[in-house]
Length: 87
Image 1: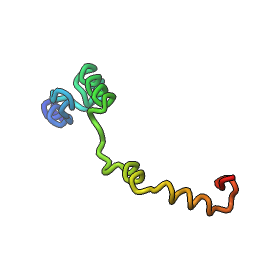
Image 2 (image 1 turned 30 degrees about the horizontal axis):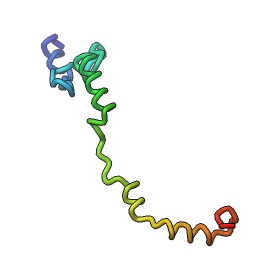
Image 3 (image 1 turned 180 degrees about the vertical axis):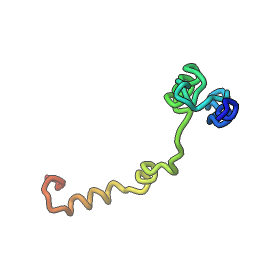
Image 4 (image 1 turned 45 degrees about the horizontal axis):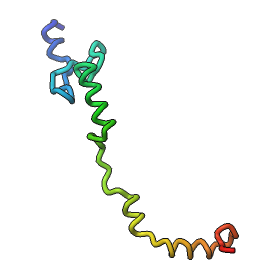
């Protein structure tokens, strides 16, 4: 294979931070980023919660709004174990 053909077959990706084209090879130390700087900028965005993976509605908020504490207490009192029963 000629060098030109090998060069054209190398996979390239865009740096997620600055959009510079980066070769996806073991020689690209910070891939998919073009540099340590871009890698750290991205890490900082995750640490500051500027980036997030979408997960749908917050199930904890839904659960908290649908649970009535009095119903939970009544259910626990009906249990056979004495731990939940008032003195």
